[in-house]
Structure formats: structure tokens, C-alpha cells
Image 1: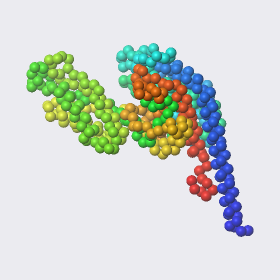
Image 2 (image 1 turned 180 degrees about the horizontal axis):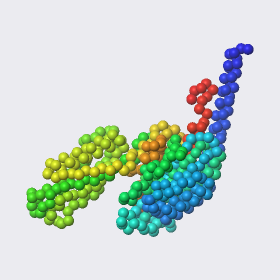
Image 3 (image 1 turned 180 degrees about the vertical axis):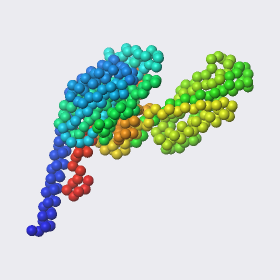
Image 4 (image 1 turned 90 degrees about the vertical axis):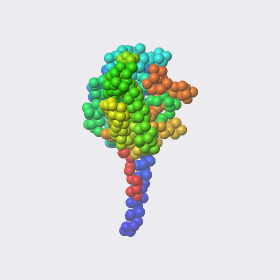
Length: 450
């Protein structure tokens, strides 16, 4: 028998096999995507009802007991493996799909803010609570009510089509993204300490955030550094008290503190490479003195530091300490500088972002997906990204005609255009399916090339 003819026949058969397999795979994926869209439309009103209920009944970080109970009951009714009480009120649920595939995680945050709502909607919050010893209004002024409702809907959609889901999906409902109360741990960092990303560990994690400066239904994201790291800054300038009429008799910490504030601004403008990454040093409070004619012993300042690069972060910390101490010493005072790291920078994995960007373009429409600007706000989703590759994107929730005047996230006037939220449901559900199917798809052609 002619071996060359046999080889050609085998190659032809292999090519036909892989072609048919790939074609069947594409057709199957199209059917699954169609199911997601149909079921998203069917669950939209239920999702909006959840969102409005959470909005009307907001809870502060580490106190999301009512919210957590509703979420957990829903997940248990779906038949998922549900773990409650993670990081106080967090929930981790696991869906095991009907096909082999990777583990993928989705995360939503549940906490509200100490903000008194001023939005005129029927489900506006009237809730009041205590925050760090103060009586405050409570409002979902950052959209976490929407995030929670969206992920509940995604969990239901994927569970009802379990046989079509490759691999395993972890649904992470997280408390205290905005920060834990004083003296408590919380948020993503505590979730991870208590095993939220273990047993099983996901290959990838996805998160999203509604954003008032983006048009309704549009999606923005960027590879690499996306949101800033945030650090807490405290500087105590110690002088020597004296009569206000005789400043030479002491050391004025108020004047020294003023010089320190100005000196800190030269770090960004003159001491670090501004072409590499932006950075911010802001002094937000300055307290000292009790009487108009007494120069006090000390002044306390607090502020925030925002960076995107870990090397620059360490450099800026060092220069803040050096600048403050040397300015104080020059005037006969002393500066005690304390910096506490809070959240790392939110950094989207380059490969994962490139892999999944076509999914977001398909869901929202290519014309409705754009590259996001870097945000100087922070997100504790960044802790998950330290453990596994992660992708975080923004969903617009403001009608085009209102963009110029829309209240920012964290404002008492923050408002969500609800028809945009279904895009978030479809985006997260499709990211799971597409990532899993890409991972499980036929990897090679008949010639062996990828």
C-alpha cells in the first residue's frame, strides 16, 4: 500500500474531524449565548425588584445581615453549595457545571455608605445607623445594591442552564468593600483570609462596577493599572507651646504643618517620574490648637495617597517621611509620619483582558465599549487580583442627556438608570461561558498549529 496515500487520507480525515468539531462547538456556543440573553430578559424585573429592595434597606460594612440573608436564601433555593458568615456577612456559593472546565469566580459587593439620600425615588432610603460613633443616614450611593442584584440574577441564569456550563462557578458576595468600621477587619482581604478563593481556587475572577460618568449601557475597561492603590497618611508635627503674642518663645507647629503640606506637593511635581504613572498626595484634615492666642504644642494632619505602581508607592512613602521630618527639623519641630496601606492598585491582567474583551464588545456592541481612563478611586477587588488573574470593568448607568450634570458615585444624589443593569447581567454570564469555553475548546487544528 502506498504510505503517502495513507498519510494523505489520515490527514484529510483529521482535518474534517477537527473542522466538524470546531463547527459544532461554535454552533453550541451560539445556542448557549442565546439562552443567556433570553433568560436575562426574563429575569430582569425580578433583578430590579431585588435592587430596589436593597436600595431601600441599605446596610453598612460588616453589618449586611438582612442583605446576606436574602442572598443566601436565594442561592440555597437554586441548589448551590452555599457558605455563609465569611468575613462576618459574606457569602460564597459554588455551581458545578454539567461539562468539564475551569473554575471561574464572579464577585459583587453588598455594603452601603454613611450618606443621607437626596434622590426622589419611591424606594429611597430612610435608614439611619451609627457609623464610628456618629448618627448617619445610610444609602447605596455607590451602586452596590445593583451589583448584588445583578450577581443574584447571574447565579439564577447559570443554574437554570447548568448542563451547558463548563467547569465550576464561584459566586462571591462580599461585605465592607468601602472599608470596615474602625477596629475591625473586613472586605476582600478578610474574605481571602477565610478561604473565599480556596477549595476550589479559580483560574480567573471577574468584577464590575456601575459608574455615573459613563453613558447608560456602555462598558469601559482597560488592561493593566485601572484603579489606584490607596494608603492612609497621618503626620503629627510636634512643636512647643507658647503665647500667640510671643511666637519666638516656642515652636509653631501650625506654620511648620503648612510648610509640610506645601512640601509634600513637590514630591509629585519634582521628585518622582510623572511620565511613568500619576500619583496623588492629599492632606484632608489639619487639627491643632484650642484658642486664638495660644500657639499649640502639636498639629495632626491626615490624608490619602494614591498610586498605581508598587515601586513608585514605596518611593513616595519614603519621600513623604523624609520631606516631613526635614522640614520640621529645620524649624526646631519634629514630625511623626505614619502610613498605613489600605488597598493595592486594581490591575487588570493583560492576557485575560485581551482574551475577554471580545465578549464585552459582543454583549454591549463594539461601539459601546471603550478604553477606560485610569481612576484615582480605589477598589478592594485588587486583593483578589493579587491571588488570581482578574478583570474589572465599568458599566455606565447615566442617560446621555444627563452626563454633564450626573452626580458622582458616593454623592447623596447618585442615581442609577435601571435599564442599563441588564447589560451587566449579560456581561457577567457571558464572561463565564466564554472563558470556560475558550479554555475547553479544541486547541489544535489537523496540522497541529494552535
